[in-house]
Image 1 (tube, rainbow, N blue to C red):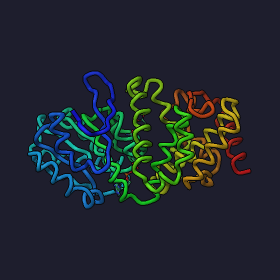
Image 2 (image 1 turned 180 degrees about the vertical axis):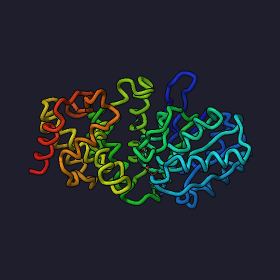
Image 3 (image 1 turned 180 degrees about the horizontal axis):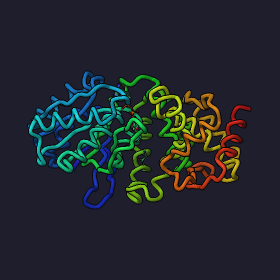
Image 4 (image 1 turned 90 degrees about the vertical axis):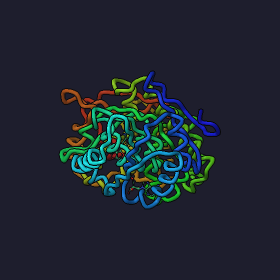
Length: 366
Ligand code: NAD
Ligand code: GLY
C-alpha cells in the first residue's frame, strides 16, 4: 500500500495505523492520505513557525491530490498549549462547517500534535486525524501512541485523551530546519529507548554521536525508526498506561520536577529528561538494581550530546514536593522507573524519596 516507503504498523486492532518514514516524503502526504481513504475535507493545524516552513509544501501536495484544506495556524510555544488556543481551533472548525466526515492533520512539534490531537478527539466526539511530526521529539515520541492533551494553569497535560491517529508521516528532512538545541533535546528521548529496552541500540548510539548531531540521513532514519518501533511495541501491549507504558516515563519524574520548578519553557523537555535520567540511573545504582558502569555510560552518552546532566539549584524539599505531584504517585507513594543496567527497566516504589534523592544528588555533585 505504501510503496517505496519504510513503515511500521502500530497494531491496535481496528485502530491500527502505519508510521511512514523517509526523507523528503512530505510532498507525498496527499497520496498517503488517499491510501488510507482519509476524509476529503481537511483542517491542517500548525503554528506560525512551521507554517512558514512547510505549509506551502503540504498545501501543494494536498491540493494536487484533490483535498479541500483549511489552515489553522496557532501561536508558537508551550504557553499556548491551553484551552484558549483549543477554543480557537474549535471556532475555526465550527465556522468552517467541519463535520464528522472531515479530518484533521497535525503539522508540527509535540505542542501542535498534542493539541490538534485533543481537538480531533473531542470535536463532534471525535474526527479522524493524522500526525505529521516535524521535531525529533515528536517523531520519536509524541506523535506515536495516541496521548493527546493541553495544559491547565495548574499543571502540564492535565486535560487530555487517548486518541490514536490514522497515520503518522515522518519526514526526517524537516529536521534540517530545527535549531541545535531542539535537536539535542529530541535525542534525549532516543537515548531513553536504549536505556529502557535495547542495550544494542544504546551501544550503537554511543558510536553514532556525530552522525546524529550532523543529521546524517541513514543513521538518523535508523535512530528514529528504532525509537518508534520500541514505542509501538510498548503501546501495543499497554495502550492506556496500566503497566509497561509507564516505562516510557524513565527520567521524567525528576525531569518534570525541573520543568515545573524552573517554569515551563526555560528547560526544553528533553533537556530535563536527560538530567532526570542521570538521577534515575544513580538511584538505580544505589538501590543495587544497576551497576556503576551503566550509570557511567548513561552520563557519558548524555554529555557527548551536550545534554545537561546537573540539576539546577533548588532546595531538596522543593524537588521532593514537585516529584510527589508525579502522575505515578498513588496515595502519597512514589513509584519510579529505574533501569536495570542498560536495556532493561522496571517500576519500583521509592519509600523515602527525600533520602534517596539527597544521596543521588550529592553523589552527582561530588
Ligand atoms: P514544540 O512543539 O514546542 O517544538 C519546538 C520548537 O520547534 C517550536 O518552536 C516549533 O515551532 C519549532 N519547530 C517545529 N518543527 C520545526 C522544524 N521542522 N523546523 C524548525 N522549527 C520547528 O516542542 P516538542 O519538543 O516537539 O514537543 C514538546 C511537547 O510534546 C510538550 O508539550 C510535551 O508535553 C509533548 N509531549 C507529548 C508526548 C505524547 O506522548 N503525547 C510525549 C512527549 C512530549
Ligand atoms: N511519552 C510517553 C507516552 O507516550 O506514554
